[in-house]
Every structure is written in structure tokens, then in C-alpha cells.
Image (cartoon, rainbow, N blue to C red; front, side):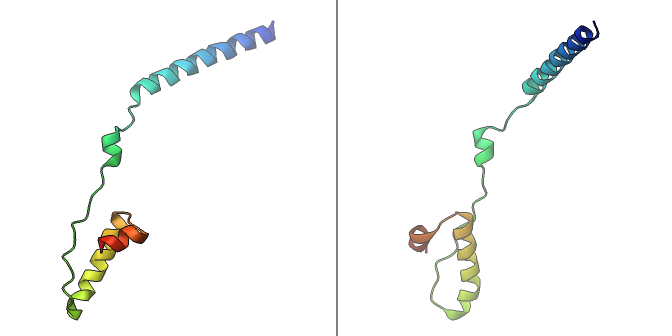
Length: 80
């Protein structure tokens, strides 16, 4: 008798939890593909003109651009 009551209570709790899960699933809206792919792009830095004083500002900007665009190896070399 007591085991049957406990079993009945467990079943009722399972049903209640399933309803809660269903409600939460209907409320949850995952971000769309467009929202997850939005990424800020850094502008292209100016071309290096070969002047030594310009290298101090150009080099960090090109490194940041390569890092933000996730370029590596030959792709990074070709970009520069």
C-alpha cells in the first residue's frame, strides 16, 4: 500500500516535471544563425608606404586585422 502510494507520487512528479520541460522548451528561442554569425570586422588598414615612422602604427593595426579575420599561414601572408 505504501509502495503503491510512493509510486503514484513519483509518477505525478514525473508528469509535472515533463510539463515544466515542455513549457520551458516552448519559451526558449535559440538565436538564429544570423545572430550568431554577426561579427565586427575591422577596417582594412592603409597600405604600408615603407616609411619607418609609419611602421609603429601600421604593424599593430595589421596584426589586429589578421587576428580578427582569423587568418593564418599563407592566407595571412597573402593579405599583407
